[in-house]
Structure formats: C-alpha cells, structure tokens
Amino acid sequence: MMESQSVGPSTHRRLPPGATACLLLLMLTALVLIAAPLATAAASAAPSTARGGDPLALLVLQQAELTASDAAIGDGFGDSVAVFGSTALVAADCKIVNGHNEAGAVYVYVRTGATWSQQAELSDPDAATQDWFGTSVALSGDTALVDAEGKTVNGQKAAGAVYVFTRTGTTWSQQTELADPDAAGNDVFGTSVALSGDTALVGDYNKTVAGQGSAGAAYVYTRTGTTWSQQAELTASDAAGGDGLGISVALSGDTALVGAAWKTVSGQSYAGAVYVFKRTGTSWSQRAELSDPHAATKDAFGSSVALSGDSALVGASGKTVSGQSGAGAAYVYTRSGTTWSQQAELSASDAAVDDGLGSVVALSGDTALVGAGDKSVGGQSDAGAAYVYARAGTTWSQQTELSDPGATANDGFGWSVALSGETALVGAPNETVGSAGATGAAYVDLLPAPPSLSLKAKPISIKVGKTVTLSGTVKHFLASDKTVQIERQVGSKLTALKTLKLTNSGAFTWATKPNKTGTWVFEAAYKSGGVSYLSEPVSVKVHK
Image (cartoon, rainbow, N blue to C red; front, side, top):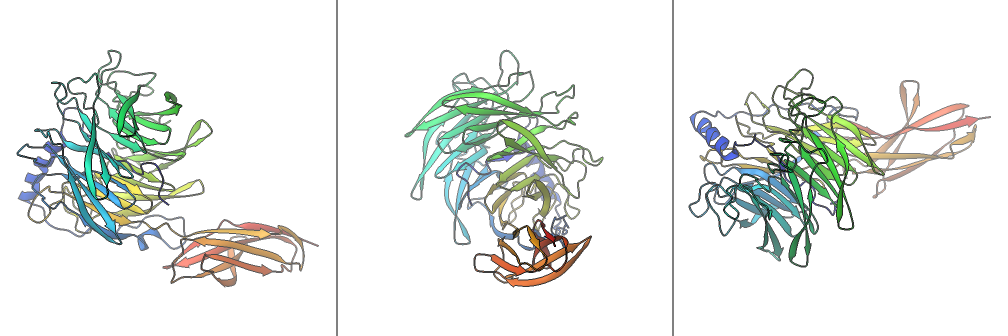
C-alpha cells in the first residue's frame, strides 16, 4: 500500500564540493563514443531467507524504460528520480534549455495500466547556464519539488533555489520558488529535497553556520493554501566546518533525517553522521544523532537517507566491506518511542572495491532499494546495479540485484533510485540512447512483495487425542499457486502432514489430533516457482 508521505524522495550520489555531475557526464560521453561494446549483464544469485534460492528474482518485472522525447547528448536524464503512486519524475539536470548549457529540465511520466507515458516537461522560465535544474527532485501527490543548485540568487552565484510545481488535471504549473533569504555564493541550496504533504525539506550542505564553513543546514517550508513559508532552519548541535549537513534529507510527517556525510566521528574524518529532527506544533528540535559504531575514515555515513514510518535507511557509500574498500553499505534504524536503534547492516552479496553501494537509498515499508552506480556488471565497469532488500520480522535479507540487461560501461544504472509500494524507479544518466552518448534513461521495475505466511494454533495445550486447529493466511500468493502445506518439525527434520487449498483471501485452516505426548511444532510452507516460503513455527503442548 502506498504511504501518505513522500515515498522514496530523490537521494542520489554526490560528488565532492567543486565538482559537477555534468562535467563527469561530458567525460563519460567521450569514453562512450570512443568505445562502449555492448554486453549482456550476468545474472546474479542473491541470498534469500526462503528455501530454494532467490524468490523475488522470479517475480521482478521490468515494466518500462523511460527516455526523454527530446533526448540529446549529455542530458544526464536519470540523474535524479522520484515516484509516487503512478507518477514519476526523472531529471536531466545537464540539459540545454533555450540555448543555456546545463540549465536542466525534469520530465513527468504517468502510468495507465501497465503503460508509462510522458505527461509534461518542467523547466525554469528564467533558465540560465549551469542552473542544474533537477539536481534533486521529490514528489508527493500532485506536488513536485525541483532543485536548481547552481541558480544565481540576488547576485549570488550558485546560491541555489528550489521550485514547487503543482498538477491540476494533467497540467503542471509553477507554484512558487523557494530560496534562502540569507543566500550566499556556492551555498548550493537544494542539493537535496524531500516532500511530505504540505511540508518541504531542503538541504544546504555548503552553508556557513556560526562561522563554520560548509557546516551545512536544512530548511523546513510549509504550505498554507498556495503560499509557502519558511518554518525552521535545522542545524546540528555539534556543527563543525566541513560537516556538510544537508547533503541528504528525508521527511515523513513530523520527522526529518538530515545527513552530514563528511562529519568527523570518533576522530575518523569523513566518517559521517545523520541527525533526527522532530516537529512539535510548529517547532523543530534535534532528537538523535545516528552514526556507525564502527565508523571509519571516508565511510560517508549519511551520503543518502530515506524514511518510512518508524524506519530509517542510511547509506555509507565509502564503507569497506569484507576487505573491499569503497564497496559501500546501508544501515537500517528503527524507532521505539523516542529511541532509535540499529536494526541491520545491508551489504551486497557480491561486494567489490568502489561499488559505492549506499550512494543512494529508498525505503517503502519493509522494502529497501539501494543503488551502486559504480558497480561493474558483466565485465562492464561502472555499469551499475541496484539491490533490493526485504524485512521479515526484524530480519533483513537481500532479495535480488537489478541491472540493465543491455548494460554497458559507465551507464551509471543505480545513480538514482526511488520506491513507492511495489514500484521501483532506477536512473542510468550516462546510458547511451540510440546514438546519443550519456543521454540517459530510467527504468521502472515492479517488485511484488514476496509471499508471507502466518500460522497460529488453538488451543496451545491439549490432551492426547484431542483436537488442535491450525489456521493462517498467505499474503501475496500467486493465483497459479493456491495451496499450502502443513509440516511438523521433529528435531531438524520436517514431515509433511497435509496439503490445503487456499481461499480467495489466502486463508487456510486444518484440525488434527496429536497422538503422542510432548511438544508438537508445526509450520506452514507455501511453494511457488520452486521456492518455499515458511511461516514462523508454532508449538502445541500435548499431555496425558
């Protein structure tokens, strides 16, 4: 089910201060035009908690490849993405607009049935060279946020601005322009954006705070009617020069996450941290600071963040994993009351040096999508990949690895990611479309939730020969596979007892009479596509 907040706000890879994504795109364009042999991406086997292999890989469906109707070399289409329900935003922040190089544009796509079509192209009516309109984007309902981090504001070059667009019917129009009233040159206001209903969160990682250069900040704006006003400026309680607070942001209701990926932690430079802010009424306050207990230099913890309810996802794109420097990781945190605790560390089953996993992340319910845009795929360097993880209870496991079946070197698949329910959107801004190098593309994949089972027994204590009723439900079952098997666990062995047909709602029930004393352990197994999905076991005490 789609959440009410901005699901999967755009969080994408960031270059060091002073570098530009468009410059990198131009360099890669040259490489692609010189030599970029086609290759088929190798299939990747990913671990699963279910019996029989990689369940979600059997279910993932690539629904569409999105490209711009007016695609041109070096556009960087897919540099940032957002998705909400059946609407998607894909940015081309290096696009030439009205003769202005790297002015940028954003494309809106809508889904009808299983078909995606371009609904609109958004751009700044005052577009100028190197505005980089679309560096980051966010979407919530009929409202879109678009950053132009290179925008000159009040004469301050690269101060940055953020644009709000709204949809009426099928028409999009600009509602307002947001800017920092204290804008300074190179603040790059809007490097990251998030949106939840009538609240917007804007990162400003290069902002000078209390005399600390590039300490960074984030700004909260709220909408009343059609008017937007600044509600708060968020800064870290321990702000220091070069922290880069605001390099990533996420927002869900009254909770905000703000990343400071270059913060020094426990003496480790560029280890990174993430700050949690909470709104009470109209006031915001810092509630927590998250960091990796095993922080190391250049981990870049907080290079990306995502938020869904009481769960947070934090990317650490520079993390060394299994001896592979820069392989990257992502961390899941959960909130209980006012306390946040680390639930899991996510890494790739095939982690390699400089994959950059965690440079971008998205989260929706119990599903996480983590980009690794620098990963080599099928021998193609920097072709890129994105990994899907799922949570069962409190346990997370890698479900599958997404990549472009036509992957070529430097595509950057996984440079940007977004997630809304079962819809995943992955950008590949360096991909060649037709004969145009680094034009870019974005891919829509459907990630049906894997089947899950519940099982209960009633009563849980009986006499020998009396009846115990086992009942449960299979969620997300396939119409072609509508049976479930009840099994008994004895030691390490499972014995099949009964095969039951599911109702249309996925329910099942069975009554049995245990004929021996002791503890009987039952579980339910649902098999689909050669994979068995198991319920948690239930125990019944049988006595004389």
